[in-house]
Image (spheres, rainbow, N blue to C red):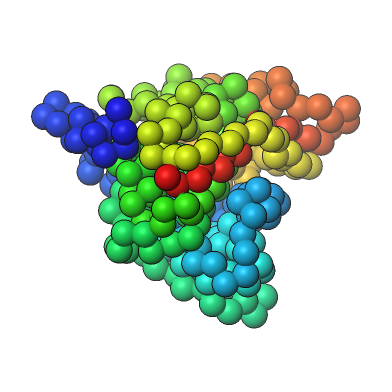
Length: 282
């Protein structure tokens, strides 16, 4: 099944209410200030742009861009970049960062990755770092990314894996706050099988590599405080629980940190696997 036919199937009668799910997700990501966490992930944007072999002057689209890690990395390589997200506050963080670095040739535009406001084949490369994997309708996301990428162009992504720390974090959240019915785990985007399913029929080449980003915090309590205060999905999860539920979730999250933490002292050093994907559009 190619991305277009999968989109039709996903929007058939009986499919999940994607609009309602998206509204809740948008509210979650708009809460807190994701940029506090997102900025620490900058190295992933740099690595992804190298994997995509971006060239000066290329037209690059960053989808679900958050606070602009891949956007800024592409702009530093003299690309003409359009940075999109459906949370205006996150785009503003990216805009502030670009201005601080005096990066030119960057446009910031509020847009939904499932309905991109661009003509077919508008971009040489389409990027996503830990962004569009959270959209509720994966076939639609893939179809839109393919549509706006020119033939022979590149789609490059970084997606958390199911077994890595962040994949397990979302699994832990799901034990305390039920995920929307009919919506698969976003961490499936971090598997080669899912990428082949979504892009394979429209790709001349697909390359994947497992990498790790390392979270570094002063202590488990510090990491929990930052994620609870600024990372929208966790902030919202705590907000839906009573006092006992919040205590149980906090204990499980600290336990998850202990399972992955490779630091010998009281600090936190947690590698989290992600799948780096480079697709060449047929």
